Picture 1 (cartoon, rainbow, N blue to C red):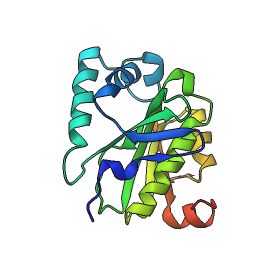
Picture 2 (cartoon, one colour):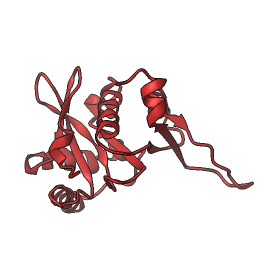
Picture 3 (cartoon, rainbow, N blue to C red):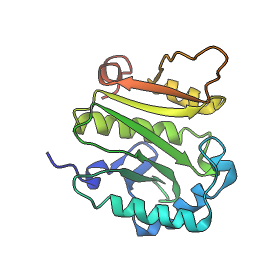
Picture 4 (cartoon, one colour):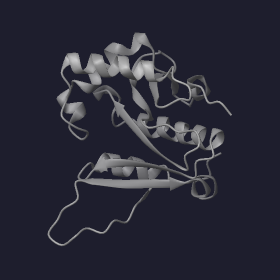
Amino acid sequence: MTIAPTDFIFDTGRLHVRPIGEGDEALYSGLYTDPETMRWISPPLTVDEAARCFHAAVASMSRRPLAALHLAILERETSLPLGLCGVQEFDSCATRLELGSILLARARGSGFAREAKAGLIGRLFSLLPVDEICLEYQRGNVAALRSNLSIGFSPEVSVIPDGQTIEWCRMSVHRNAWYCLSGNS
């Protein structure tokens, strides 16, 4: 089965999610160069770095087989951009994929990330043989923890050697839990 970026176009109650394209450079750059947005992710990119990464992301969407999935999150009624979500290392035969999302400041705290991730998870499980979807968030990012718990993610248990701290936490949701426990379809 050949998977294409257009297989991941979907709508939720408030959102329209679609593959990124050339018209999304301002959104991409605005997100990845903003220190506040990047606070929980990594150091912000320079404008030139963001431009290079954006063009690489758009180019990756035309590769077959699909190697990465970059999606724009838009407000459904207004078509205003809200953020991005996707799977960085996409493999249609993988049993585990890692999901990510990033939102503009005006879109945070409104449930948009939760709604977009839930829609993408449902799409991934319906189209692919993947058994588990995981994500990482930085310890201390309580908003991410709460949002991810609310859609069925469970913290992964990790052993931390004495005297060491963990900066990144992992969560995952399994196919069976998604369909059986969360009531998602």
